[in-house]
Amino acid sequence: RTLHLDTPAFADGDGCLHFQKEWIPEGIFDICFANPNPSITSTAADFLSGSKIMSVDLLGLQYITSVGDSFLQNCRFLGAVDLSSLQRVTSIGVRFLEGCKVLETVDLCPFQKIICISDNFLCECSS
Image 1: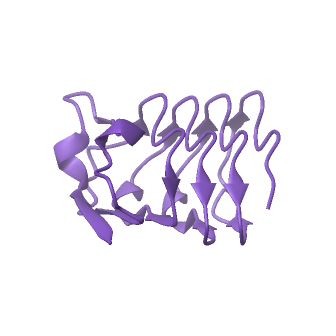
Image 2: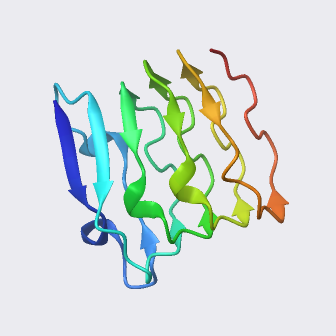
């Protein structure tokens, strides 16, 4: 089962996107963020941190330029992690994908504009 989310519904007035694992209903396997909005430019700390899902579609995050601390930290994914929607990101907070368990691949090709990477980038990940 897929949870389709209207991305702007989870943003605050400052353009920061918030979403925590506790907001995922029981039995959800995939999450899809839709309806990208140019006014949403960052993710809050602990974005989906600790989630146990098959996949996440980040299409709705295509205007994000700054990824907060603990982005997808300690997540478990049965499929590949597609970060292609994050092409505008220039700054990544601490613990980015730290401790993630990914069964397939994590494609970092979109991160060609990175200016700042904080501590523990992909630390203790396994596939």
